[in-house]
Image (cartoon, rainbow, N blue to C red; front, side, top):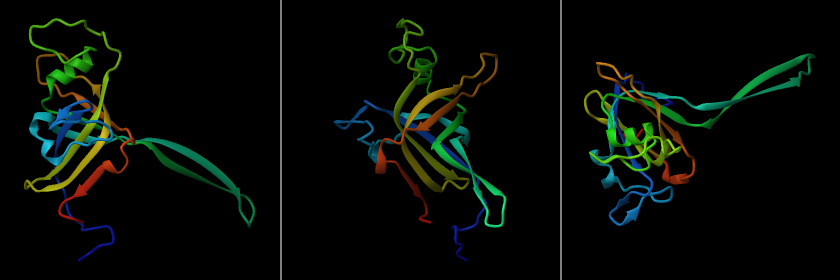
Length: 188
């Protein structure tokens, strides 16, 4: 049966999280807000880890309005609009070079046995393209979101004698127009 808002079904979704930073050259194209990576570019080379949890955390703005009623008195209504779309993404394992560069404020990605000045960079983010591929429990891809974002560390794992899971934050930059896409599979 067809429903007005799509099919009703239970969904257990996992996801792949990939990121290609602005300035990356792929097949002679320099990726940036006006140049989106081609579908073939989204390999696991750009994985930021296996997602354990993803949470939509928009920034909103509330506006309260009052108006007079014909019957006397006033009515108040609050409208809420989204001013920034963002996700907090907790990963099980993570891209240590990018993570360390942002966490320790390194000017460039770390290289083994090469010393860099810690906290030399105040820029603790990278702009680029994020791709979230949503995957059903049976392995079926249910959707792909590809958007131009600002990536930053939301929470670093504690340093202790057990596994830790960092939380990345991606904020939609809203500067790439129609290049920002969501594709549902199978088509809704």
